[in-house]
Every structure is written in C-alpha cells, then in structure tokens.
Length: 92
Image (cartoon, rainbow, N blue to C red):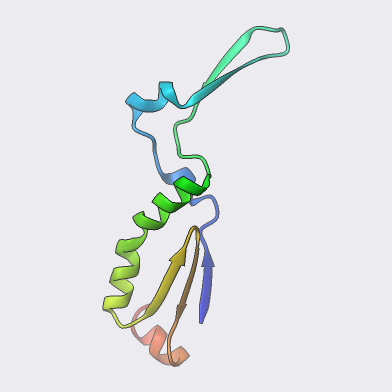
C-alpha cells in the first residue's frame, strides 16, 4: 500500500488569463500607495480542491484499468495491491 500527497499541486492549475482581473485584491504598501495583485494560478480552497479531485479522475481511471486499486480525495491519494511484486510488476 502506498499513500501520496500532492502538496501544492493546485499551483499547477493555471487560471484563464482573461479571468485574472476578477481574481485579485488590492492593499496599501509601506508608503500608503495601493498595490494590485492578481492570481495566475488556483489558490487552495475547498471548492477548488473538489475541482482538482475531478481533474485527477483520468489518472485514477487509468490505474484502475491496469488492475491497481487507487483512490484520491482532495490532494491525497492511496493505492494498493495484493503484493509488492505484483504492484511494481505492473509499472507503478
């Protein structure tokens, strides 16, 4: 059995460039001047984590079609096989 954690994987999901003006914030800098920031990658959040889980479905489907037992929830995954040899024989 193996467990994996896709830490910071959300940062690899780009936001569509035309939508970035709507996903930002402004705050004053040290001199009191407003600075504007916009996100270019997805931030962590429960609704985004749900979307990320759905994006990982093709991986899970591929592994299951190869006979591997696999599951993913949010950014954590679990996979197992009846024996170490069988699991790595299938190209894990």
